[in-house]
Image (cartoon, rainbow, N blue to C red; front, side, top):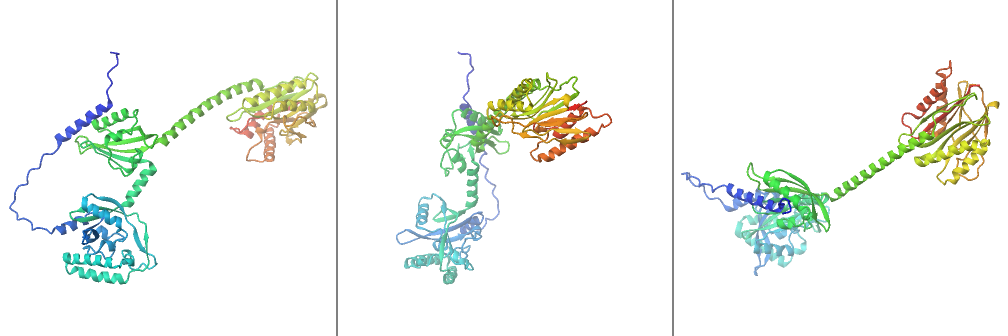
Length: 610
């Protein structure tokens, strides 16, 4: 013994449950009904069997015609004489008018779209063997001309049928009708003669969805027109939705399947019954235990089942959803199973791909969040929030608002130089994320070192351009680089593809005119021209990045006008003492970029106090 419990076979459990149910059904089968008590009422007079037959056919919802075989001297089937036409056939849109409820005409002549040599052979086989012939196609004949006044043209055949052989055949039918109905046949002959005179000359066959089933009824033939349109729609629905149904009887083990289910099991669509073993053989070995357990639970408790199974359908594994219910009468034992099955292979595959995509999206989101945190910390470390300039008569303030879901390459630099001058710069490295932060850091630190050489801003711009260009095609950046000369109250600045500065003087904001050059890193050898701006005490210059003013749905000139108006309005709100510089830049950034920014925005302002 290896210590493991004995494993139960789900298939054996299911078979035992089926045997128990069959035994219960035998025990609960009703006993033979007692014979009715004898009464002294007089017996009813005998009824004409033909009348009973006619009433029986009228009760059928489908169109039906009862016909008597007409044979030639050799015994071969030559025609069928119509005996009874039920009410549904009389209402049928393609039923010939001249065939009344009492019949009395040739089927071959009345239904030319049905009669053919193949149909004659099939009818003879049904009469000989008693085996029904199902779904016999019907071709409808219609008039080729536009004259549709006489419905009798529907059932008329081609005039070539007026051969001597056809005449002999019709005479045989008339003689048979005379023996069966006497004088009534005379009126039918007169009607035939009238219709023959008015029959349309041009005829053509038209395909039809009609199907006829032929049954032997004694020595006669019963033709029933199936509601083939509904059946065709049902087949089409099963095919389109890849669905089918099944009914299983516990008593006799019969398994009835729909055409759609036959296709799902890889069988011919015309198969209507399948041995249980053959159906279960289409289930994969790994899927059978779960199916057996579900079926055993349904048969034991009557509980509905809903599960997925795998089948060998059309040469590959298919995932089938099975939803079933128990069949029972009242509170009696379970008598069988009724289930609907649907092929959900594509749906299951789509869900698998969706789950994989969701997992991948979550991994990417986690990776992006981690990168965002790293970049944010790196930017915080590299981007100072304030700068102090002692004894130079210049005060500064800066405000930065990141983008909604990403970190950009905005940067600024404020540095007091050894020669008493001041370096003031704002830039924006292309892109977002680690690459943008890396380029931003490189340019910012390079500018801080190069400024100590005492070079003019034109030279600083050329050096930064070369540094960015050597980093590759994607390493580009825009910037305003300026140097302030306190002793001359002179601000010299270059523009490398960047939005121009704004000068606030005496409550009026003006956009300064730049000498714009290309962004850093676009071309290897570029010269930048400097612009000189004389400042006064109380003047404020604002340098900013494109995230503050650029919007996809607005013109840049309109946005610059909006920036000027915003600066003027906010600066005038506290005109008695002058606006606090930090409060001013914070308010401008908030109003111009809004609570959710498409791009990060930086605003650097410096005021000349003396």
